[in-house]
Image 1 (tube, rainbow, N blue to C red):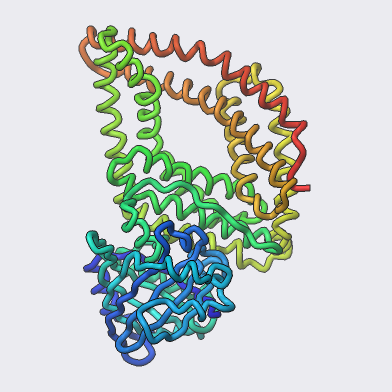
Image 2: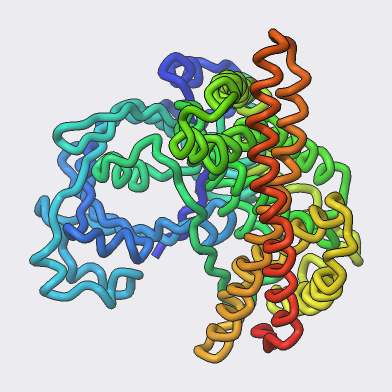
Length: 517
């Protein structure tokens, strides 16, 4: 088995051409560049059994050679930018499962699987590769240009991959940052296999939910933060195409990824302190703020105005209010698209990835910082969960006395605790612990739902005030005010029910047995 440590950048076709001509890159090159055509066929069952297990199986044609490669798709298994990889030369165009012995595929490599394997998609790229020597390390830089194909559909590939052959993984970050300053390059989160599966399933540019996080036993708090953070970043970046296409759910999933990453930064605040961390957090807040208005208007239209339009199509002012909100939604979507097309956003992804993997917090030799970073993740998680749960229970007990701002802070605290339970779940295995975790998760989900509805009501109030204050004929204003008043009346009835539901769930929280013990 080889541990593949690589970092991928996505570029345009023009930028891919430009990379190979960069003078500073040529100065680092050791020996001539090589060029070859690579055609790779990926295999799986009709039910995508390998993908479900986080594996890919491929046969690559490179000249007269055929190489069979088994990969673990889950980054983080071998470090921040690492994957487990097993490669063997084969003689045929079909996978040889006898070579799966000693690999992650071994347990699945049965005769039944062999019968069910079939080609799913292929990639065909022209690869330009060169070996770079930088700070005492050897790195292979590969520029791939070509396509992914399923037979009836194609998608272009324009990528730059940096693979560490010898030396310090931090060199990958150094080179990636310099490349991003030289050409428009962004952090690539999806492997070719993941893109191929999405294309074969007709799911390209579709909203992507959060992926599962599996932390290996014995990892440190610092390693856990990197793995969790990269998973959250993957959700953010994987939804950018859907968001750019104006998909409301794509924006929603991007915001969930941002909330999860910001929650992780809060949970690990004692591990990642520093100026660099604050700078990255500021950029994450900026992106959250740029995407926020589109989501707020969408929720008001979908949950309130849409149903009212259908139930009372002739109700005074509903149509006018709907037109106003449709215009606001369009403007908010344009604001989100502008942010995602900006240079600031392009740099955010790579900067965040490098901070997660090898930022100052991960390298500092300060004894106190190192002790926090190297603390066993299970011990760290138990401490975080044990402190936060009782605090939330106390806040819920006095929920009716809290003003909207304080309720909002309580909602955020509940959300962070729920994310923490998901992040750390794999550190506490076992049937009993799993049952306890699900019980706690169910309570937190109920709490988050009730508090989320209360927060939406407050957001609707703010948005309604903006709509009423907007310039326009007085008659239209009066009609919109009537419709908003009708919606507000409906929502006021919900407040009492939501408070009662939150308090009911909150009373169950102290009695829930901790799954981290």
